[in-house]
Length: 229
Image (tube, rainbow, N blue to C red):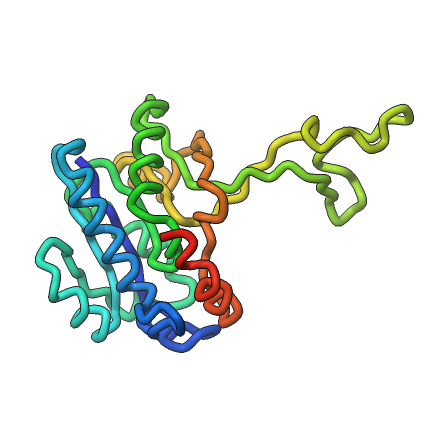
């Protein structure tokens, strides 16, 4: 029923070996944390879904060696032509051929706080709300004063009698946190994208969508990880 898809690649530029480096104070890598979460998901929720596969798509030999210990994970080699800085669209085109099931949940090991409960809640909301091949993405709700670079407000219309409305009356915005995208194979083929033309946001629990991208992010993770597990 559902294919979990994780693209990884070696040669990260901001942080060397980002996915497989041991994190100080945690003793595990981002890859190992994600494998632990998926195992817990598999153990807790497998009966709620007919079929699930976990696909890791990588050009990293170390990643392959780690994943080879887990028979329930399917490792697929990622060619170098699909591993460059601008290879996202090429990978998207490859996904329908790689994944077995019609429903594809694209996720990243760089979202270490997006755990088994978040995956389950994400899927539960999607399966309840989705219709007509719609797709969804994990998001952080944003409700603050927001201005464009040309000086115009996006969050509200400034009136003479109410220049600063209450924060709770401002427009909602949703920030894509990239922890999860879900769509059908048909959408991938039709739109050449992880989302259809009419996706909807699924709000992530507080801070659970935290994405690791820099050395400072690793330091933050080391400080907060035990509070979230």
